[in-house]
Length: 130
Image (cartoon, rainbow, N blue to C red; front, side, top):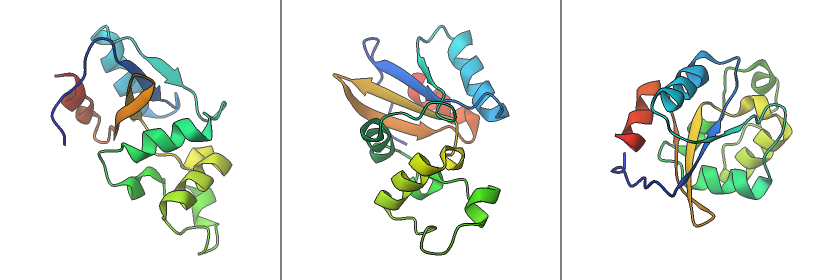
């Protein structure tokens, strides 16, 4: 993991699914630590593709971890759809938002995403803010 380079003027985004316990844990951490953030309810309202690309391109985890391969939708895809190339991952998430791994915290500075992390395990959130 990179060292913490968060500054107070940064904008924080949480890709959140309220049905996910890990996502709720990260949200609670942000709330408990009075960190101001914006929730991205990507299941119901897809972010712009350019924003999603920016978040994924700055992922500290392996970008192939971004897809939830145990979801029924994923298992029913044909092999060509399952290719984990960068552009295909964006396409899969835009078409099937449930496949996006969560929770993801992204930091934006000067209108550009500078860091993203899949908070699995949830303790990874501390690597950004401690």
